[in-house]
Image (tube, rainbow over all chains, first blue to last red; front, side, top):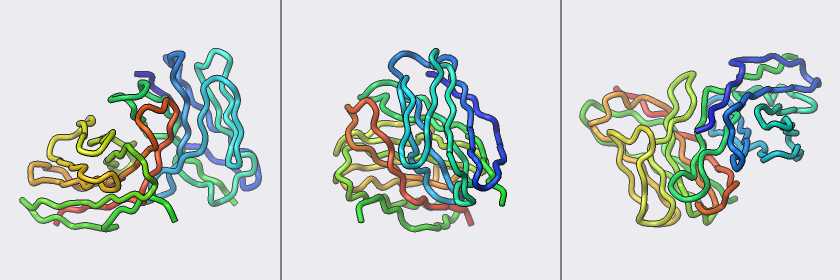
Length: 113
Length: 115
């Protein structure tokens, strides 16, 4: 199973871009990179996912390196409400019984006023 | 609104007691999951179900049991055999077990504590 490595915590000034890194050097060719976030005492919320191309949606952008060994989640204009734990996950398996996501400890992003 | 509903929000268990956590979804999703989260830790998979009347053990299934009699419902029972049940329990669902890039939708969680 591919594992991910994230810094335990990061700070970001309100209104600035937040760039959250993730290493996944053992990722295999058919594994997607997912990002979720969890605000305190709530369930995780899906943000974005990608395979090898960069992706953008209304919440964030995902930049995946060409060798796919690392990625960066970008919140373009962080607000106080973006303070949360951000999980980078490499999807395990493909369909069937291994169709599950494994969550690590994530990065606590603290947006400062 | 469509979504996943977990109840209760807070639950207390006495020594030797079984308790059941409810999880209901109206998203018409095939797959449902139960995770456990301890303070400062990531999520660990307890059980998952890909289809009605079928479920599989996750990484930490000992001391827990589930049922999947209806597509909408996936209750989790924390039995007296679970010696350290205090944790935040999260239920999730996803559209289709055969989809390669499905995403999980989570409920708001149940905090279980031992009296």
